[in-house]
Amino acid sequence: MFNLLLDAAANTSGGGLLGGFGIWGTVAYIAIFGVFIYFVIVRPQKKEQKKIQSMLSNMEVGDAVVTTSGFYGVLIDITDEDVIVEFGNNKNCRIPMKKSAIAQIEKAE
Image (tube, rainbow, N blue to C red; front, side, top):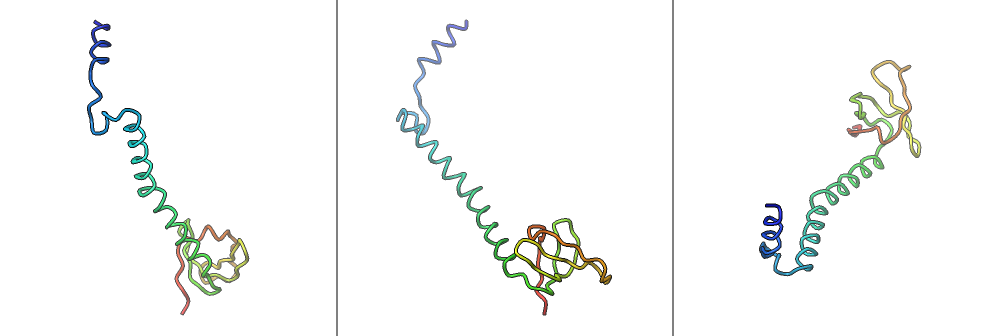
């Protein structure tokens, strides 16, 4: 029985969309899949990273921010990699954090 299945599998033609082209059909499938992955996953991710980098580079002291953990605060100081955020009306609640911890920025007026 098993030999019959192997013979049937060996005797079937490659059919399919590009199956008649042998190795070039396989290469075409891989290329099409690679282009699909680029446009669906890689390109939108790069776009989002550019948007975040632009947002973080345009931060100024006094801007209202939302952190990635959901806290609302105001920027007090900005350094190369870190920021100091003041939370609430309590002037003693100032916390240093990485710039990457900022999720949203609302410009001060």
